[in-house]
Amino acid sequence: MKVSSAGVISSTGRIKLQEFDIPIKKQEYSGWETASYYFNWEEPVSDMNHNSFIKKIESCLKNAGLKAILIDYGIMPKT
Image (cartoon, rainbow, N blue to C red; front, side, top):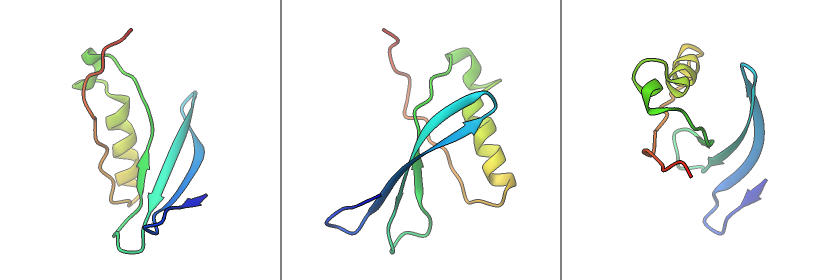
């Protein structure tokens, strides 16, 4: 756990979703309504509208009662 000079608390952990072990980061601040979580995930463009793993995670978080919105930062080139 780290605390920035602005008072933002950052921590890192891991979550297991289905068969995937995913590193996840959390940031929180006393003035924020809720913490922010970050993780890296790659999925094919063809899955984004019909079989999105990210959307499945978001749905599970919301069904658990969390105010969760997962943001896709855009399509990245695959090298």
